[in-house]
Length: 179
Image 1 (cartoon, one colour):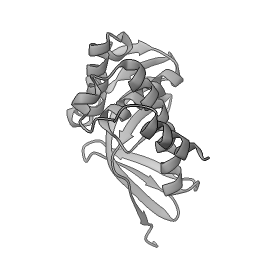
Image 2: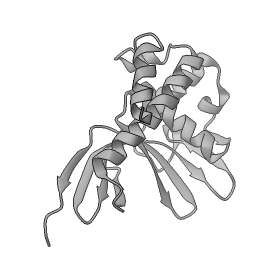
Image 3: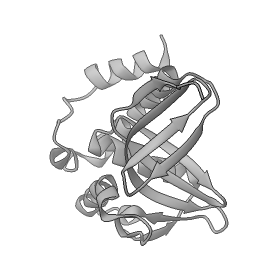
Image 4: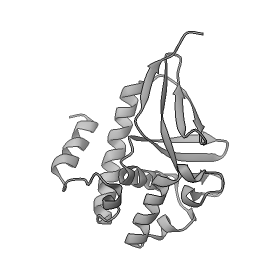
């Protein structure tokens, strides 16, 4: 059984129904949220790779417009984007987008859901503006935000020593027009 099918079976049969409304998801038990977030991020990653293939691509984000773009020799894919936070590889800190000076307010919604979840569950790593953590923990923050928001997928982009963790909505893939 492929990874995505196994994750789908677990999601459908192994736990109560997932609420459609993110405002309800933040009230679920933290163990359930963490389990679903981990299962979903694996499934969403596999679906993303299936949609765009394994072809090398460049990525770009327009925070004002609110879109992430993946450009490969044969296609362009785009989706609405939210920023979860940035990870500084030099000092091992994660700065949440919900209070990040470089992130427009309109691109912080998914990160704010993670903060609300952290407040309800008394999880200081979700409610402290800047936290020391590993890259794996930064992915966990992103997985939780993605699950809570019902995002289509996640992406981590690199800009110098900074890793940018993002969620995205419905992905549109179009053939690239010849130059």
